[in-house]
Image (tube, rainbow, N blue to C red):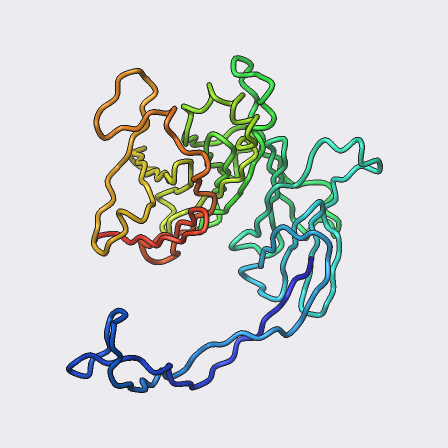
Length: 323
């Protein structure tokens, strides 16, 4: 319910005492007996302390302008614009006067990486709206609307639920947008509003299981998506602690698993495959054996290095390229 702004400061503090090994080097683990101790200088350390506290109700996400860092958005039922002077203003409000008539909510938002006056927000109906604050202070009317026509052959009771966008990310060069719905990730060109330029299926094999996923509420899970630093790769999460990677140029895709058994140093992750048929290979897993309690909702890709962070339930995994 609050937004806290922290101030970073540098200080010189030594590290805590560490046990020494036989030759005076720090030990790598715990031992039955403790040796001597040694103080290791640590140089400058960056600390954060609260400086400003902004109060607002039910904040689900904050988005900082990459060009003008004193400005940010807060997301809930409305989008609010804030700055460090404790100024705030509602800039997008799609709530009806009567909340019983509410049919659409804001699900994600993102500032443009190059133009500080532009941002996008997505909705539970699968649409993405691009707004420019230079055109109007209250962005009740969008500059562009990105929406894909629904395929009538796939129309079902769950169509609106699975089309809800859970995350939207601009590419680093600012030309493309990446959106994630329940079954797929899509790449949009800012110059083409009618349809995405690329569509990647994350777990299309779950389409026949939407009824059971609706009953256990998994159909409402909100998966995030990420760009690589060069905008050539895409990453997003799935169930059974699987995460998917897609190479845009070659259209190659891979399914990898994050688990403690394979996180030893220098261990190379082996691709996994989900089988939908009766017969399956030794290294494949049946779609009926997927654990829906194990899910990767949050992912992040380092902007400069081939390093990714994966959040699986209460575990955080960091993987890097073997190159």
